[in-house]
Length: 358
Ligand SMILES: C=C1C[C@]23C[C@H]1CC[C@H]2[C@@]12CCC[C@@](C)(C(=O)O1)[C@H]2[C@@H]3C(=O)O
Ligand SMILES: O=C(O)CCC(=O)C(=O)O
Ligand SMILES: [Fe+2]
Image (cartoon, rainbow, N blue to C red; front, side, top):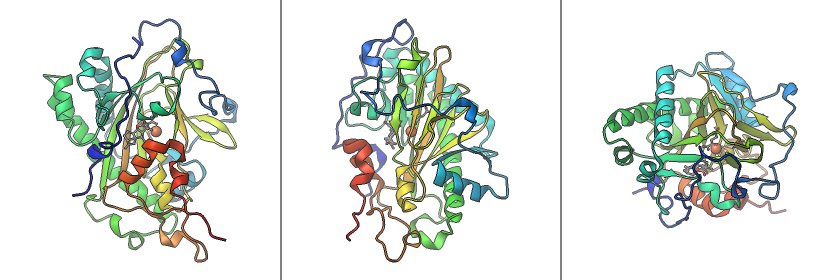
């Protein structure tokens, strides 16, 4: 039996106290434990890209005949892009935003009934990467994998079935979209179905699995000194992110610094994750991103984290490795990678890198 995401962290307990969250709504000043400086995160004070530079990740129309090349270029230069005309019904985006809003509006005691356990994957809590930072993040999250029925019943004794239905429909749409995006970007590199046996388009997506991460960034009295979600790359093939109409997501580019990804109503943000970076032998960048917070408007986001089933080994596509070199990375399953990341965080990629003998 392949491992499922639910079991990934069974042998890797992390204790993240959820019970000492501040009452976000009543604070007028930022407590020291939430005040970030460059000592807490070396990129904290990296220069923001000048707003007038006007450069951000591209917005790509999926109906455009050249969409595949545009996506390929965005994966190489940014590791992220936004998409319009993606085919996901607007009502479904509104539905998942409504669900996320109502979840985080519940009283804290109710949310804690579905708290993520130390060895668990799903449930309510602070971001997993919190353990790698000294300061706390100004956010709360809820992770879903598999059926949310048990958790949702605790949160909403009456309405849980409606909400389960929304999650199911949302995941179904995201699955289809993610696989389409993966193939568009691979095709732009000349990689076709014959090159990746486990991931054929015609297979029923049985080779993939996913999680949903709901995020809430409450209004913050001193947003410039706080951090919503610290810089990280996603441990996925691709992540599809829905953000409400409050800005906060930023992506990092060595040459530009932090670049804000403006919310475009109805569009979705796509991030290249570490596994896609590995699969593309380093050609696609897994993008470093973070979320900042806001003084007047609460922010919500929903990340669809997408990867291969746990028995599938990901390694660089041979076609993308030049004949006189070894592949940049050795092969890993998603489970192995998530566990490496849970222990080594941003060193995880370098730990599976092949060292060139020469
Ligand atoms: C499938 C995944 C991917 C995880 C771990 C696990 C479940 C939750 C995901 C996130 C979501 C929030 C940011 C992140 C960095 C975090 O702390 O939890 C993500 C992490 C990763 O992409 O590494
Ligand atoms: O809230 C955001 O915009 C980013 C969320 C994110 O990066 C994640 O959930 O992995
Ligand atoms: Fe992320």
